[in-house]
Structure formats: C-alpha cells, structure tokens
Length: 253
Length: 233
Image (cartoon, rainbow over all chains, first blue to last red; front, top):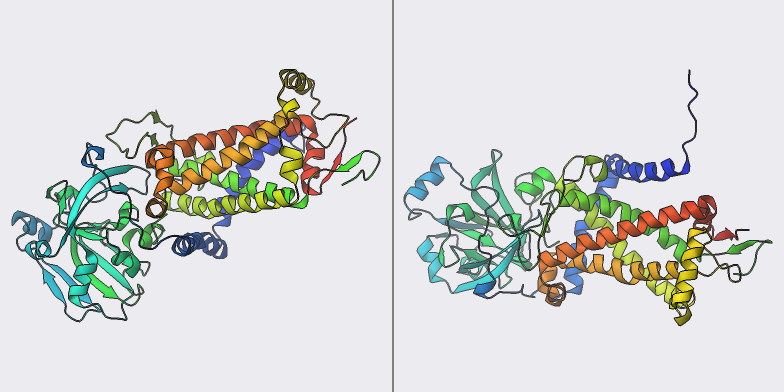
C-alpha cells in the first residue's frame, strides 16, 4: 500500500478552506435558528430603509426616449384558465375588480370605472429579482385613491392582491403594507406604453408598486382585499413566491 | 506596541484583527452568494435598463455549484445570504474606518508618503518582493509601498464601490437616494460595476493569500489572530 500523507500542505488547506466555507453555508442553513437569523436580514434592511430614508420618496421617472425598446415579459405570460379566456374573449368588458375586506364600501370596478379616477402616468424602471431592468410607461388610478373610495378601515394593515393566474397550480397573490399602498406612484395600471395592457404584461390590470422588485407587481388583478394580518392567507407569508421559494416579502432590496 | 521578546512585535491592533476576520467571512459568503445570483441572469449591461433583448457587454459563464452559495441554484437563498452579509460588510467597514481613524492606524500605517511613490523606491520594493523580502529591517512593522497601495485601493476604493453599487441595485434606494444611480450611470451600469468591483476584491484576495504563504503563513496568520508577529531573520 502506498502511504498517504496525513496532513495536507498549506496551499491545499487554504484552497480547501474556501471550498469548505461555501459548503459550510449549506450545512449551517439546515439549522432553523441559523436560518431565522439569516432571514432577519430582510427585516433589518426594511427597518434601516424606513428609518433612514424618506418614506414618500419617489422613484426616478424617465423621458420617453429613455424607454426600453422591448419590455420583456416574465412569470405568467397568459393565465390560460377558462375564466380568464372568457374575459379575454370579451375584451375584458365583463372583468370586474373587487375591492373588499376591511373597507366601509366594497367596490366592484370595471375598466371604465378605473378610468374615471384621477389618472397617473409614469415612465419607470422595472427591476426583476433576477437582475434585469426594463423601462416602460404605465397609467392608471392611484391605489390610494381607490382604497379611499372604498373607505379603508383603521384596522387594515396590508393590502392583498389576488390574480387570475395560477403558478404551478397555486393562485398567484401578493401583498404590500399601507406605506406602499398609499405611495403616490403605486397605481393600478391598465395601460402600458400608451396602449391597453397586453396579456403578457398582465391584462387587463396590474399593480405597479415602484419601490419593489418585479414579483410584487401582481398581474391579472381580480381582487384587492384589505386585511389586518397576512396570517391565514396562502401559507401566510404574503405572496406566492414568499410562500413557496423564500423570496423576501419586503422586495425593496 | 513595543518589542515584546527579542524579535516579536505587536503588529495588528484589536479592531484591525476583528475586522479582518469578520470581513474575510463576509467576502467569501458575498462572492459565493453573488455568483449564485449572477446565474439567474448572467448578462451585464451598461445604462439604466438592460434585459434579455438588449445588448449585453458581457455574457457571463454559468458559475459551477462548487463556487456558489447555495451549491444548487436557488436565487431566493443566494439573496438571503447576500443581503444579510451585505450588512456585515458595510457596517463592518464603517466601524473599522472609524476605529482606524481614532487609533491612527490609517494615518500611521496606510498613509502613502511621497518617498513611497518614487520610481526608485517602487523599483526597490519590487526587487525586494521578488526576493521574498516583505519588510524593511529598519522598520519591520511598517507596510511596504505595494502593501500600502493595495490596502488603500481595497479599503477606500473597491470595498466602498462594491457597497455603493450594491445599494444602487435596491429599488427602494432608487427612490431614497437617486443620486446614487446618477453617480454610476444607471442601475445596469451599477450592476456591471458591482461585478467588476467583486473581481478586483477577489483578485486582491488571491494575491493576498499567496503573499501570506510566501511571507510565512503561520507567522502572518498568528499576527492577525493575536497581534504578535515575529520579525523574520
């Protein structure tokens, strides 16, 4: 038998050390306590941003010449359900957006109803969690105005958005808090780049919540519900991706 | 900080040693998790926007599992690691900078003097490196000129750049500090610069580790653990 050296040399130790550090991370996160600490990063970023920066600050808006030539689609490109197909076939004339939950006057809004609110148009940058960005123009009423029209109750803390699409069989949903719900650039967009929103980008109406990553911008909106807590909705973490793959609920980071 | 034994000196102050190791862990985790994040969209652009149909100036390779955190592709978990340790990196650097101004580590050890940068001095320093002599026998505690230059570039340029370009990627910070995006020429430029700053830090780390080995690994590591450094013969 050939004797093998018992101790690796220095170089192997250092190179191996880096490899071990990376592999070690995967071991560490198996422990629930370690995972909890790691996941606290989201809360720390949110608390720091909320404490140190202006909560009402507006994202930069751009000139038409600065827009992306092609604004790519992502996530669901077509919900494809029979219900959605029927709405689409009728050019969304029968589509109604329910506004309910902790509100004094539940609403059922058509596209024409959305058009009767004061409109806000904005050319903003959309940042996907994957890393790409696209700049496009969005138009619609401010979510804050719609919630005021419905008479939001004091007990409401979050706004939940339910969508027409299923993602991996589960209904897509998202949620934001009232700071973002009443932000002046948070709108229910029914137009994109001066045309009706197309199916790939969330027809007939999607959320624009400009200080967050793309997955918060729920497409194919069907129902907006004001709630006191996110517990009991989906798996309780505030959204499809948050529930199923550990994405941050606070997507301002 | 005087001579302790015949040839053992106290080389590194406690704040320097603490920050060194905290930062070392943060750098390893941030690079590993950052490469995992890169795999989600391995294309780099210049300007404000950039996506699949736009011109990418660099189509990055897919980083293998042994280089990424976690080993399997998982964007959410890579981001959890990355964003937690981003705070460790940023606040660690801030604390180190404050401590190093107060204990005069920066002023005493990192300040480049005119004579450090003369052609003759740099040439002599280069020859000394080739002969594996990394300290001045007259003043063994002092950093050599190349050490000072590289530490200054990392501490005052590469690390602040990687932190600020990272911050510029946060969509909420785009609203809070829009000047940050103007400074870097838009979010996709910031993302490209973030990657380039990472390469600079990784390159520094590799050279740093090589020189630690060449200078006598155990003596150097011990000086960063306990502060005690044996002056080479």
